[in-house]
Image (cartoon, rainbow, N blue to C red):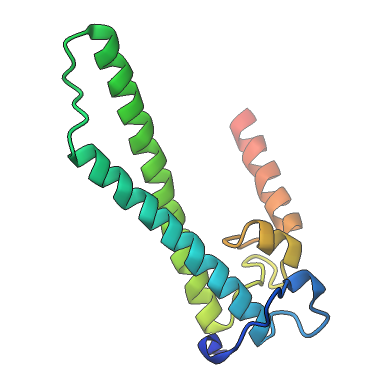
Length: 145
């Protein structure tokens, strides 16, 4: 079921929680598409600023050992943050693909709709709250073994 949401006009001040129409109707899909695009744009902007700033020469080779250790710790933290953001951008891209394919908003495990409140809070969610909780319980059991 393919969807073309780019021709839909999003009403000003629209919130999907107030939408009493069909689940994942074209307006709701467009809302989430725009939300995902804005989030991805922000992450990419922050990432390019980080790269630009680190290339402008915050040196890790400081004469003082404490300063050097602090700079290396900051640099490692920044790299971990950027790696998490890179993975998040990948999830955003996958969610945008689901929007275009008309599959966005449905649980990958059960096929049931994911609550609009959950999607608004976590637009890259692929599991309903119930399926996510089952998944986390199963992970906890395996971790505890």
